[in-house]
Amino acid sequence: MYFTNLHTHTVYCDGKCTTEEMIQAAIKCKFQSIGISTHGPVPFFTDWNIQECNIERYIEEVTLLKEKYMDEIDVFLGMELDYIPGVGFDERIRSIMGRLDYYIGSVHFMGKLNREGRMWTIDYTIEELILGIKENFHGNVRLAVEAYYNLISEMAERYQPPVIGHIDLIKKLNKNNLLFDENENWYIIAIEKCLDTIKNTKSIIEINTGGISRNYTLEQYPSTFILKMIKEKEIPVMINSDAHTAEGINCKFEEMHDLVKVLGFGRLELLTKEGWSAQEI
Ligand SMILES: [Zn+2]
Ligand SMILES: [Zn+2]
Image 1 (cartoon, rainbow, N blue to C red):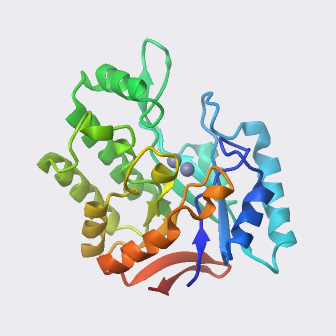
Image 2: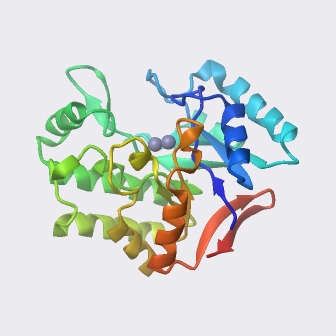
Image 3: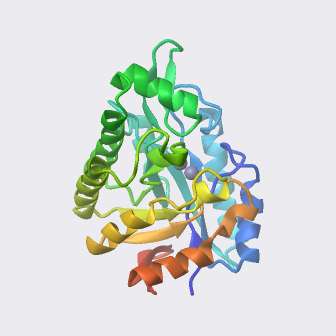
């Protein structure tokens, strides 16, 4: 079995460990490769995206560590890039993309919090999620959720990110179906539409255990019923942990390998020095 993880964070963003500590954790877990995917820069202030002044140092550091550990593990230089509503990936982001081995395209921002004058994130606190829906969608949860999946579709269509991050992140703070029920017909239709768009791109959907490891969600992203739809549509998948600590590097990986087997997936995508490839399950 080939173990890898392309979704990891470091002290360059909101991760708790250094790049080297993450690589060493992956070696300890006998991974064949690891990708470092620091949250990319955004054109406004946050305390969890890499700062513009650190980008060159980040690229240099990962490149040096690639060399240092080349006999033990393949290290890939990546970023998790924010698809911003109304902007997409701006020119600055596109120029960085070209220097990376891969990137993960994610939607965390869905608009603005007008009264507070800052960007609205859907995965920070439940209060912020509700306020954003109130200010941007007149409190209509369904419209907000549909708009979220439309943004993912738009990102996939415009850029075909190598990996699409935590596709159903919108469920993260929806504990006990506080805002919506994933079994509702409109929710399933919204996902179906989004998957049909992704199916026509080259993007891989990640199975992400980050919500479980940080105690937000009971299930991985995407939920198992969505994984079944992904399997039906033959969209490629890979397993990542969205690790923010060295200990989280392989969170629930064995369970996820069992799950994809049970669901009947035939392969898992992976990145090699020669490019994208896959392993049979
Ligand atoms: Zn993310
Ligand atoms: Zn992440």
